[in-house]
Length: 180
Image (cartoon, rainbow, N blue to C red; front, side, top):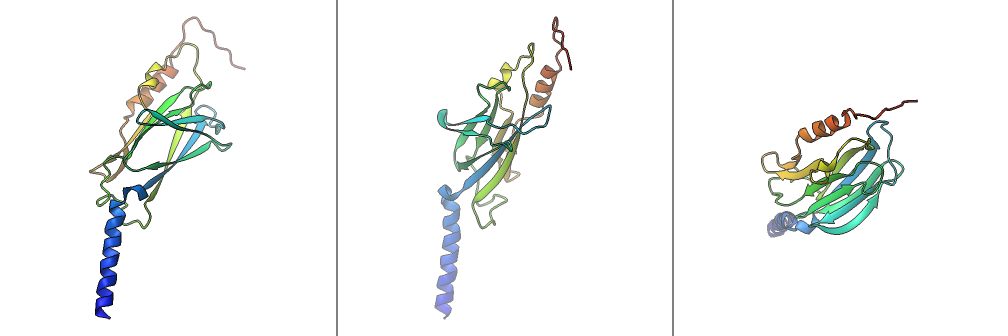
């Protein structure tokens, strides 16, 4: 009886240790909610192109509730291009799941290695004089694991939001805007 209990305990310890080393079992369920920044309405049929190491992986589309879903794997870096080729301004997101220390991660006691994250993406249409070329090179969100916080954090500071807001407030010389 004693040997059976010891064997069972050893098997449980090995199972737990194997769970941390099996990086293929760690998944990140991302949900993306897109909506019009001005009207707050959910946006349907917004394309989200997904790339891994610069290689195209897949395109997902938002549903009528503005939502789209994609499952990401551990030890990868993804780039997402939101709304390429539509009337709304294109935005970029980077998700880096590299260098996550599973043994000290704040979710290490969780029974499942599937983590859920939701990203809200505000989209807006460009006015004639606005220049958002900087968004081609600068992500609006850059998620990466932080060793001190033991979780995924956004590396993009609020300056990008301020930069977007300043460009949207720009007065266009020679353009008369009518509102009805």
